[in-house]
Image (cartoon, rainbow, N blue to C red; front, side):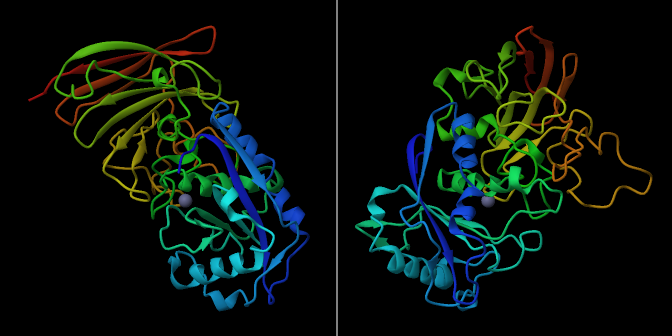
Amino acid sequence: MRGTGTVHALTLMIDFPDTPGEGSARQRFEEFFPQTSRWFARGSYGRLGYRPATPIRHWLRMPRSFAAYGIDRGSPYEPGYQRLLKDIVAAADERVDFGRYDLVNVLVTPNAGPPAAHTVLSVTFADNDRAPRADGVRLSNVSFVYSRQDDGTGSLRETGYRVLPHENNHSFGLPDLYTASGAGRAGHWDLMSEDWGANNDILGWHKWKLGWLGARQVVYATESPDATARAGTSRHTLTPLARPGGTKVVFLPVSRRGGYAMEARTPGGNDAAVCRPGVLVYWVDVHKDSGQGPVTVMDSTRGTDPRHPHRPHGAAPAPNGPTAGAQGCTRLPNVHAGLSDATFTPGQTFTDNRHGVRVSITVTDRTRGGDYAIRITRRGATS
Ligand SMILES: [Zn+2]
C-alpha cells in the first residue's frame, strides 16, 4: 500500500482469558502514540499523515487463550494468525467499520508471550490476500506488536514505540535490512535494520521507495541509468536527511546487481543516534529480498568490500584485539557500534575497483549551511 497521504490506522488493544490486559488499554496505546505519528511526519517531511484511531478504548478480549493460537516467532499466517484475526473481527465488528481504515495495528497485552528481549514475536502481514474480509474490505495489512522492547537501560519510554513504525513500514513495502546474523550490514542507519535503541531514520533509498522524496531529490550520478560502462566525473551537494529539502540521495549505478547510494546523515530529526556526521555510502543490491541483506553500508573506518560484510553484532572480537573502528563512536545501547562511525567526512574517499569499473567517491567539503559536497569519478573497465 502507498506510504504517502493520510493513513488511517485502526489500532486495537487485545488480551486473552489466560493473560488479561496488563495495565489499561489506553496505557498500551500511549506506549506507541503520539511518537509513531511523529516519526512518520518527520521522516516523510510531512508527506505521510498518520492517523491512529481507537474506536474501542478498552482491552478487546479474545475468546481463546493466547496459547490456543500457537503463536511463535516466525509463525506463518495459517492457521494461528488466520484464527486470531477472525476472532478480532468477530469481537470488534459491532463497533468498528473496518472499511474506514488503511491498515490495522494489533497491540497485544505485553504479558502474552515471551519478553521481547528473549524472543521478538512482532510481525506484519502485508498485502495478504488470504486475510479475512470485514465490512467489505480485506484486512490485508495487519501489524501485531507483542511484549515491550525493554532492555533494562531505562530508555523504554523514549524508544519502545519504534517497533511499530518498523512493522508498518512493511505494509508500505520496505524490507528488513537485518539478516540471520544480525544488523551488521546496515547498522543503526535504518529503522528496518535496527528498531531497538535510540531513534533512527530510514535510508534515503527507502524514503525514495516510499514516495517521501520529490523527483529532483534523488539524482543519478550518470547521465543515463544504463551508463555502467561510461566514464566521467560528477559533483553533487547533499542536504542531510534530518532537514527537509535539497538533494537527499545520489545513486551511482555500477552493475546489473546494483550500485552505490550516497546520503548525508547528521544528528537531528529522526536521527538521534548519529555520532559522526558525514556522507553514508551504501551498496544496494536490487536482487536481494528482505532479510537477505539488500543494503550494505560501507564503513569509512573499516573494510569496504560488500562481499565481506562486517562482523555481526555480538560476535566475539578478534583474538588480537578489536579491528580499528569496531567500537564505533556511539555510547548508546542497542546501536550497532561498529557501523556507527561509517560515514565519510570531508577529505575522505571511498574507492571500489570491482564490478569492472573503478569508482571513487570523495567528500570534498561541508558547506556553512551544513550540506556536503561530493565528487564521484568513474573510470571504465579496468582490465
Ligand atoms: Zn521487520
